[in-house]
Length: 290
Image (cartoon, rainbow, N blue to C red):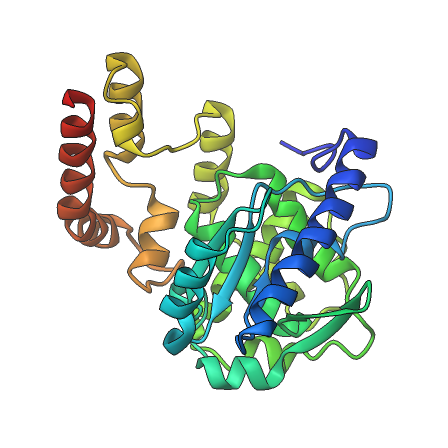
């Protein structure tokens, strides 16, 4: 199974990228006025790797904040909303990376867009974050695999693979390498000559089969509390969750994609999410009753 294009009604998406660029400038200007310096991930930060004639659609702006600044940032936007902009607030990098906020900030880069400074991760760190985010979605979002394709195919000549992969543990290292391998397998990413070529061509068979199954189903996972009034969709979403997606379960439990079985990761993930899921369902139920 190969994918032919990324998000592509290209002219529309190119306009969307320009809009994201403009929105990012407005958001960063607002936060910098109150002394907060977030780091932009995904969205426009990933779209800049794409060719000019290919856009990358995005519905919000993902910003990572120093944990000590997060509540101040949320309160500021709550009191001073930026029209037409939806912000996804992240406390540090949470599960997306294991490096400290201070280290990632020190390695980050500043882009100057329309005279406005926008802070992004260095390309080595951003590739890791993009890969982990894609896996956290269980590999279900086939179009977002293009983020990995372009992040690798347009990398600079001085891209430092050790800086990218040598700073995390072996499990996380393989997460990134196998995601690159999937971009090679499904999108035709050229990985010849890369120091990770051999490992990237050795993606576990179970991962390939799981991804093909999810893409064939083409049923995105959505919050259960949004489908309480539709029994069929509710049952459909339950079936999506039981048993839990083995890719997502492995990542959420900081597991190894090379493990002989995913069952223990799936059990751990199920137990970890059980209470939050029920709270979400109960809250949604009582909102409907009002």
